[in-house]
Length: 353
Ligand code: C2O
Image (cartoon, rainbow, N blue to C red; front, side, top):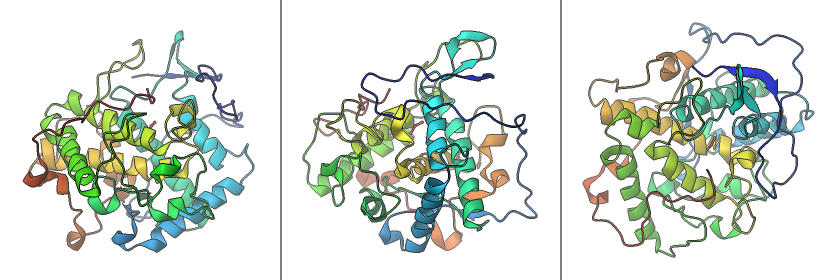
């Protein structure tokens, strides 16, 4: 495994990065505490739900907005503050941490099989802190369900300028009701009708989740072990829609497409967390791929061999609110499958990475 040197120094920010420039954590008064799974006897199972209004759970999103407001109100040096939570992402994608004993090698959480487990753990703690600040142990993150037609726009609550979920550094032309382009490349607006965009998105989902991801390394990304150079290669879902929707969300007029379009600042947009909305959906699709696609019927697909981060139940969260609430996966519908659409670049997403 990759072991991280405890020292941290901000480096490798992109040219014309926007402040703040420092993304290392504040000094810790104590040694790191080893991770322990929550006790299932005392920890409720938390259900993450879609953020779009059609999913009918405004209350869930309103709670997330309160949690973000509480995090933003903490002093910036408080490790639970929104500022420090965003910094974690920055530090793990700008070489701020080095591999233990290898000061020449940075620790990088993108473009390898570290992508899914790192972001799962990141969301997990972000969610736990939110639950604690809200005084609501049952709190779970909403997710931005851009893989279903009703969820393909930025959920309304995130676009409301008065909401703590709003971020000014997003592309104004992509505010709702504009549909997300899961296949987006910087500088290439497709100008499709909504129906065309939905179909293209569903086809891309099928390709990234099913036809193009039959082997674990295709879905999860290339192996990345201690002593390896960073970024050996991303899995399908990381490339698109993950990267493409990062870039689609950020402000196209800025050099690095901040906030969402570039790693160092992506965590500054609350949609990252609900990105935990965006990332909660990535995490959910990992689960769906294991359960329904590679693991069809078995409940367990081929995987990395550390079982712990793979078990949402042990982390006490789920995306399934019960039998009556099975999430639709419209991209599994045969009507959503190829032929290819001209102009589609499934490997799109130029800035991020
Ligand atoms: Cu660490 Cu969505 O990227």
